[in-house]
Length: 369
Image (cartoon, rainbow, N blue to C red; front, side, top):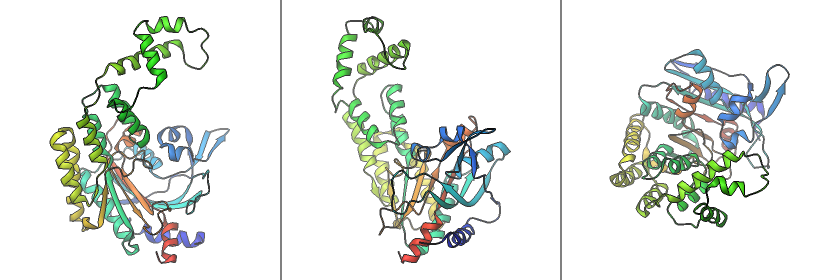
């Protein structure tokens, strides 16, 4: 295994790929205030953060990544368009020993904020990472979570159902279970069916009054509200089989970007809500060609990033060692406008970035992979 000194030197070498005119080098504090960050990170990172208590500053956490602290810094300074690059250690607890996963490792990366041309910013980020890692011959994959969010938001169903599907886009099994239920493909749970039958005869308030002692944290008003939500949902007509098949077709796409774009255009013929996302993808691919990226060597996966990239909400990408599929990605990144919007208190701050694991780069190079 590479030593820390070797990894630090490799991090410095990779860092040079992101430096240049208009790029600011930053290094957020290793110890970060925990309250805001724990609410913002996806479940995967949040569950593995090292959190401690400070008698003066309250809950603190060891830096689990760079993106959120850099967004906070950018918002606090009130900057407009900006480019940042960083290099340093992050800390993530590992519940189960996994080969290639350390609880303390280096990240090197770059973030772009407020770019006037989002497609160009995404192409620039991908091209820089592609160039930095080109000698390794890694498998490159990309996707776009914005495609799935667009098709969900365009579904002809209730706002409550669309909201539920949106919440679970990053949890594929739960998303699939909801989709099957809304399409009538799966049975209503027995307990819910009994409750709905009872609600057809009695009001929720009457049911609750006859229920006896209520044990739990929910107030009676919360329980009644939930019962009415379930009643309204049961009255919704099922999603059409054609709509569900379109979602299935989208999620099955695993092609070169050019072929994926053709398939997405076909789907968009029957789902016009998908058109803006397809147009963004087309502009991004054209910008990548302009940066010299050979798209025929990239794999586009419509489902990419749904299990490990919860705060990304658009373009996503990663680079992997094909011969070592158990390893985490050597590099990954994407667009996170929604995260920047939350930290900017509603202000629109287009943001895209990514990171490389220099320790993993060095390890794979030493193994000749």
